[in-house]
Length: 455
Ligand code: IMP
Image (cartoon, rainbow, N blue to C red; front, side):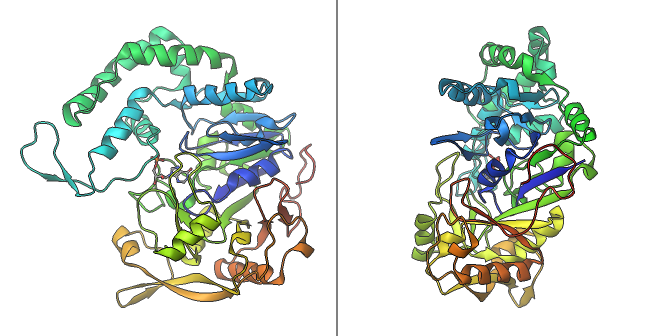
């Protein structure tokens, strides 16, 4: 029952897409199991570059079945956009694509609520709701991607969500939407002073989109479980990163799904033991988009220089990413939480030319020195990084394909990371290209009985 899981260990944007792209052709099934169009990863097909937000990474690989799992917040319109973009390049992915009937649909009012909630949270922290006479203090904006993710998962938890299976019959969809929109519009218009979302608009957008995916809808969990029972190789594709996890991340500055490895079973519909090996992906430094605490952040020109060197701008929103040093405190937490077996380290090439690179090994909070990751956001905000200098790669090695092309200093840095987080580094990514990947350990699928080639 070979299951291989790839998750991000930081605040997303670790380079998972490229790793998944490299591994997907060795799998029989690829499952995307959480998040929605807030994620974005770049996949290359020959010379062509595609940015996917929802399509699993295996859609370009022959013979791979791709499942959009039940845990995904599914923006059907965005999914069709991605399918159509590929079709325009002569690639029909629909024979390789399946959509879990239990996935919740992102609806237009989710996007409207996401934007309205961000907009009413002014940096001043004072909210004047419609009809409010006093100044009610408000929390800071989260800096969401405004893709409707939070409100979609909120509706799911509130038992107001609409799953793909519930939308297949237009009459049932309309009947379910009626009360949901009544509540949503009471909030949108009555509290946030935003525009209402009408039922007929929603039906006009969602109805035809559901019609187009109808033939792809199936019991996603059932499909994956039966392929696992047949000994096939299943690659579970995480989105975002551990520190954005709704339960275990830097709450409330998180996304609204389980973005640690813990979410894979529930979001795919498989037993937890279906996963045999967990690869955590981490950058050799750290980035974050959106608001929230970031203890290892580099402020000022050095941070800007790192952003420029690493081209750190969001794949989904284009926003500049905040940059910081590798944070071993946060990483130890992330690898332990997800039960990570090995780590893929990305973008160390960006740090080439440095004789030494700081690694954060502890936080100083007032007179306390701590080595564990705090739950309290105010502790994280107050945390001053305690660093140690690790050796760095003195010479460039962008695009290196072999160990011999990588300077010794890079392996010394890898060794320092392994020591600091207590996990082996199994892969070193040396550039955006799918083949710019150096395997440092053996087959990640382990003693696999699956039919795919060796990863
Ligand atoms: P949401 O997921 O759009 O609700 O955004 C919540 C937080 O997660 C914001 O700080 C976003 O910038 C962040 N976020 C969501 N998806 C990603 C991602 O794929 N990469 C990096 N950050 C993300």
